[in-house]
Each structure stands twice: as C-alpha cells, then as structure tokens.
Length: 552
Image (cartoon, rainbow, N blue to C red):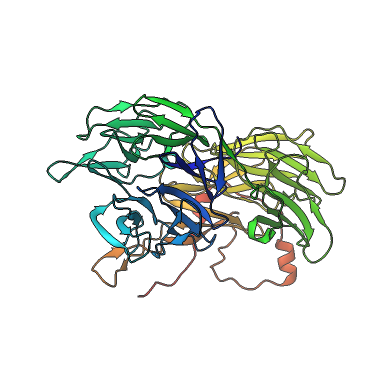
C-alpha cells in the first residue's frame, strides 16, 4: 500500500481523494489495469476531508480542520485545474461539513452553528465564487442529494465510528415523494452516503453486520445489496450519477451500477512521508504521567509511550524504553527499594509487567497475563505491587519471592476495582469495590489473601486512603442527602452529595473529632505501637467528618 486513501469522489474521468491529510487528483485511464498516478493539489493546509466535485466539474469543495487546539472546521473550494483554496464559510464550528452541491453549482454546507445542540445540523447553500450563505428550508439534515428527487440524510456519519449501532440516533434517509412530501427510509442499522444513480437511491448500510452498498427505488422499496465486503466496511461512497467510488481499508473501489461490477483501483500516490519523518517535539506536550521517588529526589516520566528516570533538579536522564523494539511503556512506578522501577510493556504484543533495576541495568519481563492493566500501586515497605485490570480483578505481585509470585486477591462482577492504597506497613490494601451497577464499597485485603468489607454496599464509596500514622482509614462517599432549593424554579436537588468519612482501625482508639487532653512527649512515645487493624466491629467505627450546614 503506497498510502491509506480516504474520501474518494468522482466526476466523469476525474478522481479526487484524501491522503496524508491533503487533497489529491487523478485521471481514470481507459485501461482498467493501468496504474493511476495522482498529484497533490493542496499542501499542509490542515486536515482535509469529505471532498465533493461540483456538478459542472470545475470545483472541488472540501472540509478543512485547522488548529490542533481551536478545532474549527470550515468549507473551502479549489479549482480542479489547481490554484489557491478559497474559504467559503465562517461558521466557527467543528461540525461544519460539505453536505453536497445544488444542480446550479452551489455548495451545500451542514453546520450546527447558531443551534443549541451539536447534533442539530441544518443546511446552507453558498456560491463558490463567494457571498453570504443562504439557509435551505429542509430542517435538520447533514447530507443532501439532488437527483430525480431530493434525498435528505439525518445523522449520516461514517459508520465505522459506531459500528452496528441501532439506536434512535442512527442514520436515516428521507426521500422526496411526487406530492412534495418526504418518506422516511430506515433500516435496522445505520445508513449514510446517499446517491442517485440510474433512478435508484444508493447508500451504505451495516444492518446486515458489515457496511456494504445497497439501493432502493424512489419509493424506498425493493432493497438490493450490491457489494459483499465481509471484513472491512464500505466507507464514504460518492457518485457522479453514473459510477460510484468508495474506500475499504484504505483502498479505493469503483462500482459500475449498469454491470454490477466492482474493481479495486491501482493508485500510485507519491507521498512525502511527512508524518513518518523524524522531527523534534516538545515532550511536555505529550506527557502521559509522572511518579515521584519514595524519597522525593527523583522522578519517573512517561511521554509518547517512553519512560525516563531523572533527578528533579540535575543529573542525567535514564531511558527505560528499548530503542530497537517497537514498545510502549506506561504506569512506571518506583518500588520501595528506590532503585527498581516496574512498568507495563506491550513488547510481546500483549501487556506484561517489566522490572528495571537502575543499579545493574537489568531488565526482567514477567510472563503474567493480567489482561489490560488499569492501575499499579507499589507497597511502601516491601517489593510488592498491587494492580487492577479490565477483568475487574485485584492482583498482588510479590517480587520478594523468586521467581515473582502473583496472587488474585479479589474480583468484582460489575466494574473495575479502583483507588487502591497501601497501609503504612505494606500488609493491607484498601480499595473501592463495585458491589453492583449502582453502588461501590470500601474493602480491605491483606497480602495473605484475607478480604474484609468496611462499608455497606448501599452507596458509592471511593478514594480510600490510610492515615500515615496507621490510626484511621479515610474515604469519600456519595451519601450526603442535603437538599438545596433551586433559585429559579421551585425544585429540590442534591448538587453536593460527596462527604468525607473515616474508619477508626483499632479498638479503643479515640475519634480524632473527640477533644482529649494533650499528652506529654513521654506519654506519646509510650503509646506508639505497630500498625494493626481490629477487624471485628470495624463497620461500627465509621464516622462522618463534621461539617457546617450549607446555606444559600
């Protein structure tokens, strides 16, 4: 494949498409086996998409997305013979797109500008020579085709973004009838790319599982299937009224409705390779995460899938990622030893834990299949790591043992276990456990495998955190039902249901909210003891943080 080609469009023997974010033009040869050589007609304007030839073949209208931060899309035109692209719209909306052309060579644009909702697009027509846009009287639509009758498309977006979607926002067509009204065409699937060819309405649909080319008569009956792609979707079909072009997996196909034949076009695209050429980038713009060393003097940084260890103020930068292999690292964390870093690597094609020894430079890849790892939390005292995954599991990996040992501590049936925190002695884990579809509780799990439920599964409890001194376990809970009156209408709501709570871990330990006499230094030292949790009666030692009543 020379290039991944998108958005093909056709007019007689001219073919236009998008590759490398630019617009390209080619001539279709008489010999179908001959290779087609395309030339670039735009150069680094932005991200080009959805080109459409004008009915007279003089212009190509296209959507141009400019600015990685502004994300504003507008419609431009460019002469087919080449020249300067001309901006037609100034709607200032990312949803602005080319919807079609009128028979008298006016560009039709769909946009949600001046509308309260992003999905509420309406149609405007604009003269390619310039002038103010004029609204079309068809209501909500984002595609229009002028043929024997008018065909309107609503919610007609690329099906690959929402494959086999069958909900209420799926694409539908409205076909004009002889009496002037419109008849809705909807299938048990998504529809887009309507076209008029030989007295029939052609379109792309995935109601049979994979996007393919179909057609109906003007009354919306006599449904026929014309292509049989089984693995990849037919995408962004366009027609000049005689033939249809579309792309599948980056290749362009030409479909002849009269003969019911299709063929893949051989297109030569002389790319510049600008997206794959080496370039200098600002790593801070692509930073994914950072982790501080247990002693605070060093940091681990992951940017663009590569992990680095460096001093906070000075010193060399150590790269953990391999140079010779296509590997992405993430979730790099320091172990309690301070000279070891554990991370998630996709070196083998599947996610695996990898351990780096910063002293020796040794790298160890662990062959544990945890699925997709959601989070990592290292023990503050021992060479242990707790991890959660997309299988709703909580695992403990013990590097103290040789070889390292993995133990399944807990598993939910309803969601990802989250907010894992270690106790100060590195023997207990606190975490938020999804109990059902609507509630989560705080649980404790010991390194030996004992699991204790701390809170009742009647609310959403999350973000547990151990007190550094080991006296309490703090967490947040959405259970504070403090109704507030609406200032505009007579209504009550619960805008701030989250409240902090704590659990007293030891029997006999006083609540931090109970005033007690200040102990002397000798008494405080005598009272210090090793970390422990009294499991019995734990749920009865829960207290809410005292807070003042909210006022309007």
